Amino acid sequence: MKKQPPFKKVLVANRGEIALRIIRACREMGVQTVAIYSTADRESLHVRMADEAVCVGPPETNLSYRNIPNIISAAEITQSEAIHPGYGFLSENAHFAEICQSAGVVFIGPSPESISLMGDKARAKSLMRETRVPVVPGSQGAISSEEEAITLSREIGYPLIIKASAGGGGRGMRIVHQEGDFDNALHAAQTEAFQAFGSKEVYIEKYFQNPRHVEIQILADTEGNVYALGERDCSIQRRHQKLVEESPSPVLSPKLRQEMSEAAVRAARAANYVNAGTVEFLVDDRRNFFFIEMNTRIQVEHPVTETLFQYDLVKAQIRIAAGLPVEPPGKSAGHAIECRINAEDPWTFAPSPGHLERFLLPGGPGVRVDTAFFEGATIPPQYDSLIAKLIVNGRTREEALDRMARALAEFEIKGIRTTIPFHIALMQDEAFRKGTYSTGFVEHFLARRPRERSDE
Image 1 (cartoon, helix red, strand yellow):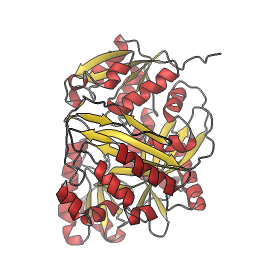
Image 2: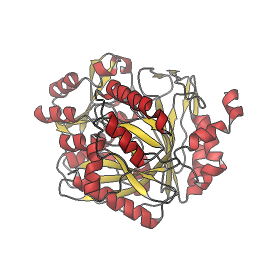
Image 3: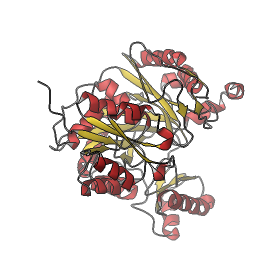
Image 4: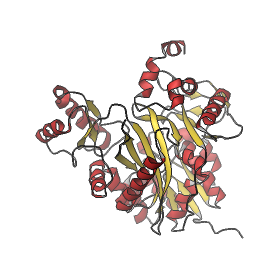
């Protein structure tokens, strides 16, 4: 007997590969979908794949994909019961979640209260201290004055990092190595934070020179169950933007993995969290771990976890939002790696939008490609440069690395520049293959490869 779908119709408030990913999950569950799109995305694949589509504005995101009145209107005229925000755009906007509730539309994600709490990094850190989750040494909350900031900086010790309380993605962030640079860095961080997030509030933390960035995927249902689905190592990043993710992390022992998973579950319970989320940690060179933030949405790199656990996180999100139980995850098996294929120069990372003259995807055992592009499509300059996510799995890390190298070599894109050459070189790098990398690895890796950078 076919199961009753959790919703009749879901509006997908996003674009690109994540919109397509959600549409496919809904279709398998018997749920109709509504795509929204800007005029720049009129011919996009997520628009073609959805049961209905509504134009919500021009290419500018504030007038389309972040336009709350237009999105709510689209949900109302299509009689959508729920909205899935994907990642980015409005996915971590507590006000949007509140508006959905007031309009009688289910927001497929955590409550506005949980989003607001965990989105304020200073408040989140305070809660973690109360919950016995290790946090990076730093200010107890947003700093209130320059005098307090200077006093705290001396107590914490250099190097330290100044971060925007309401932000992320590297904006409103400054690293300070000595006291003489502190004043200028503080003012610059506050100015950037206000421009990006509308708030000048910042906080201060100890800066670790070469940590690992490791996150724990959690899933919490309406019946009080909170599950941890292993970790993802996201240390391969440039300017705080992730490029490669893998699981299991080469740096975690079974004991450390268990401790971090338990801490992530405590964090979710403390925030009264319901739905999918990710608790992010730094791991220092002594294998101590520290909470840095919680992402209250599905992550770009969620396929890594799905591959290892054979578990559909998007379907689980939808079921939880409908108040339905979800099956507990089983045990993970093997090793998975994801490479983000971006429309960028592979060595300078300058954007490279344009027309896809050739777009040939890799395949074979253990290979998954999440993309919303196709041969003949155009990469618009207005949005994120992500073209595709290439995910592979193997029985061992070595097999997964070899499979990724093979799949990258099969991936053929012409008409624009992409980061595929960077990823191919990375898969061949001895230090990366040994797993001895940190968040500063990419800068050193690029500095060691002048020939490739000049030849591209």
